[in-house]
Image (cartoon, rainbow over all chains, first blue to last red; front, side, top):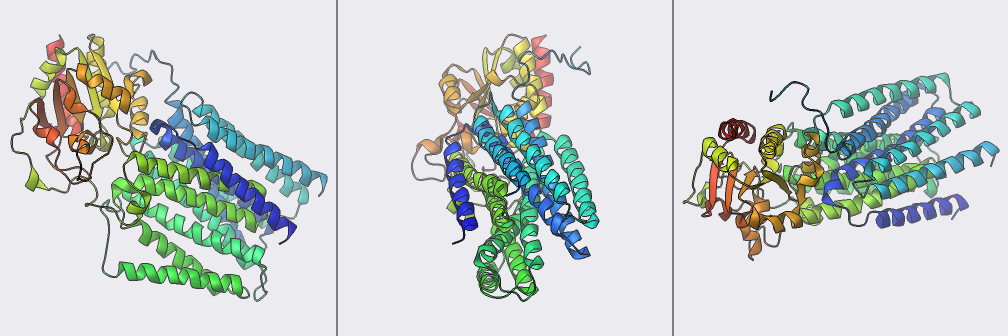
Length: 106
Length: 470
């Protein structure tokens, strides 16, 4: 086994253990936002898109790099945005004096 | 290791720490948003660092820059616009779509590096094994998540889709995946091995998701989310990048635990769900045979009167409310009652709505105060002092049969709606819920039924209540 593989494998296994550990019982209320948040984190694949784009040297590879960057960017940008929107609803001030913008019950 | 590489490694390590702490903070409602922002900060650091690395190394060609920047710009615009505009009821399918493209991107990295290797050269196992796993898992999540998106959005039927020979086709896909693995790992690189692996994994993803009913989709989306994490981790092995390995493995493991918790909250096992589920998918499947006969029907006017003279009202929202997008109407009714001095609370079953926790998000979106949303145990302690329980589009989660043995909902935690003084059920018909069994609550002595769509029914009730409150 090469040094590189050993290091990567160790990192992989330890990260799995951290993942199992950090996700102990969470309230049902937060399960959907949590899933969305985890979904955003695997958007880190966007870093991989940079790496392959740096290697690309012909049209076929450019197309693949484009597809990879496009997909990864949707995942990461959309993932964080929608998670933040969901979670933002929980910390809205309690007595929000939005007394209804369009005069609902006047 | 050059100075730049050392520095970059440190930055990646810090960003990985941000993800872990971010997930940790997301377990509590108070710190959840900060957690997500922290993890996003880690992501921005990683992206800035890789950009600096590319610029300093200077290897990337102009065509590479164009492909990269164009892809990023279009992807960011599409993703952010979608995420900003989506109605909260449609969030599950959007998350599934984001998951699909994440898996697609991971698979694309594997495809790229496999094709990039000299054709005909023998590959080292350190490279070929992760390439194979990356492509297969990425391909399965890509097609599987797209089907899940379609099912949640209604483009693909929510009912389990089965066809003659599907098991055989499934078996063929699995054999093809194994065969492509042998070819990719054991033989010099040839492009058609790759095509075989891609096609087999895409077909397998389709076949895995099609037979699963719409109500189980949330668990499947969560499982595929964990898969994508693993695909990303293997992509990290392929390009020897540790931040991908750490973040991917983190999501893979955390996503697996989350999937198990979701399945548990829905009283289902992941194995059962993947095997194709029981019953026949979503509610609307008739089953009029076992309809209880002594059902009392009521009118909006009558409900309005009851509500106007109640002290404690408990709203029990369910899938029907989410499907009819009636959260605005329910909030309006609650506000009307609260302003008249009536106590209104919401009893939220862990799996009410379309996904665990989804109901809370829907209600929070229409300004329902967080402290009015009562979780299962607290709500159950309140039913005895409740004058009226207003059950809106919920069925199985209120079924008293769960307390007895030997039926499809046995043992499932339920809301004890039947203990309140009176119960009003707003529902389109007497059809059964997902479990496919009748609900004795509907024929209870203190229960009356109001047959209507949640949205229009609530509008009528709001109008009726107004006239009695004045």
